[in-house]
Length: 411
Image (cartoon, rainbow, N blue to C red; front, side, top):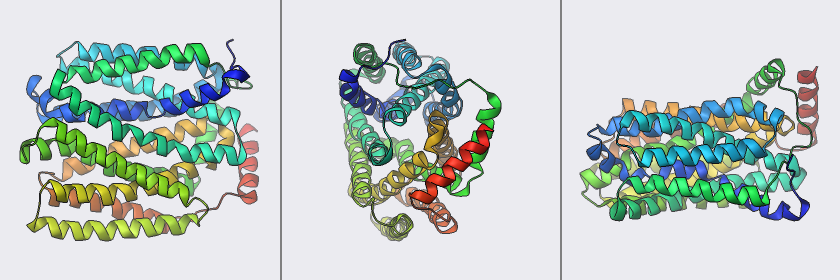
């Protein structure tokens, strides 16, 4: 077994953090190419948008399953095989014009991304604890925000100069690069592998999902991320077909969206010592008020600048809420390692997929007013959950509860 060398711990930590945004890259790099893909593949916008939903669904479901497998078989080799599979699927997509084949390969990408992300999140639970672990978990969504900043900007450039296939060639070489770096610098980090017992896994999931503040947190994560997703799914058509801007503008606007999410995440991290409920409640109320004002404004005035006001104000608030809630959920049951990581990631991604799909299917987002209406529906749901949930602060009481829950499950 190739174990992680102490001398490589710092480099391996950087690699683990760098791989966390791989899902965001797989989702966002081809966003500016959606209209071009629709035209080239002779498919409707909804059919091409399904590439996003398929990835999200398989990514979310897989995270629910791979957590227990990684606790039983380790982190290193599953991650290596997943990087290879992710790259292979990306190259296949780049070399085909069959929409059905693209659907299959997007599903493969979703499964492989789940293995990569869960193994890398578990890396931190294997090596760190206490304040150090809390520091890294609060960094997750900050680093995750790098993908929505970089990927669409890069994707717009690639689409303009090389066509939509170049986005998937980029993903393939991205995976191969990290595959080589992981083989050189990383290694196994799990101290002891747990036997794969389905009863233990189901009991752990039942315990976590039966805890309302955790389940509510997953729903809030999904709703907050869905704010970004409905923009990603509708903005290429609003910008390129309604306002007649090129794909590079879509990429630049998505980069602004990512910067807004990052700004909100950084602010949340800076205020991590403030009362948890007060932070979330204030952000959600402000977000709802802003969305109402913008809906009224864009009835009369709607252009690229008003769209960016939506993005900057509402996406930064979503980033703020998402960052705080992700750290809360990941550390709520940290004693369950990969299971908790997988359930957190899979749970919020599945809810994101469901919420964003419902919004774009029930609301025809062909103007900024209807985009604002979609935002408002999601924000009202977030605020309702925040108010109706009793949140706990991290501390001694939480640790006692976690130890008690773990003992009951192991018994």
